[in-house]
Length: 171
Image 1 (cartoon, rainbow, N blue to C red):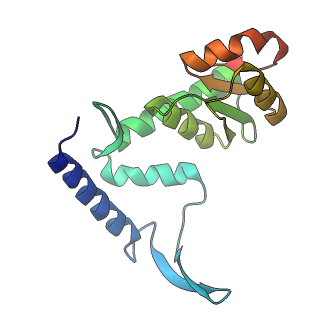
Image 2: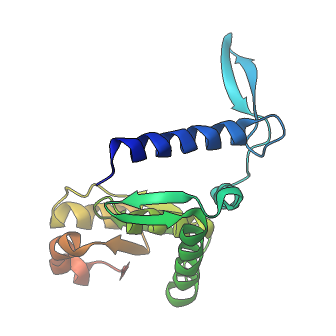
């Protein structure tokens, strides 16, 4: 469990990171623009895709990116894991740009990695309601056209009776 002081330090680091990324010469620089009479902060030179956005973390490669209970993962560790997972999706499951990949699990680092790996390939993430029961999951997977689904143990138990009726890979 984090102490109040550790939380304050993490928030201060986060604020510094945001300020650094939004500076005029930074990759996520912003400027004010009026759209339909309303002023908005908009990106001056935004990344073209999420994969490019993930690369921005290399500036803080050794800083904490993901926190789950007592687990900590740096930007570099997280990106390396996501890239490895993306390679597995491509090489073992033939996931390519435009394929749909569902994620149905509790909040966890694995959920984030599944999301990142999918988008690194240019595939489409189908986030599913983790409260759904088996028949709802079957419908969602079938209706979305997902080629693969990431599930945790609880969701596997829900979907297992329906796997024979689905043409889908399961991780």
